[in-house]
Image (cartoon, rainbow, N blue to C red; front, side):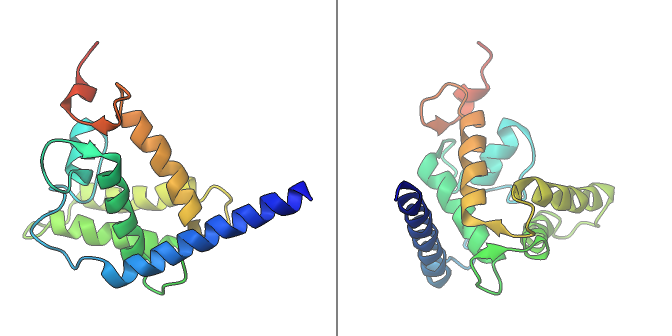
Length: 164
């Protein structure tokens, strides 16, 4: 009986997340002047802030972070099946990278970033089934936000980069 309840709970969570993704598809923004300044990401505090500080106020709240991640997931799910294939994941990332390279030649760093996106997909796809699910994305989102919120105050800002 307990196992059935756990299975039902997992199914309910998955269904709720799928409904959320579908709903966000209908309302996903089409790319306004607002939004992160460095949409393709990177490493370190500056890259995190540039990737997720959508209102550009110098603070990334958990809500802001989750919203940007959800928008990217929805944008990547071009066939609307509720999960991302490696091709969808990399294509969504490449679209953001091309925005950063607008007017510039694609160089070795660009090629390396695309190669890294393939590696990242394989890490994020924790059950190795070729599908990045909403649950897998949420798990890495939780971990990544906590890693960047070094002082544990529920937001990421310049104070998280200060040396103790």
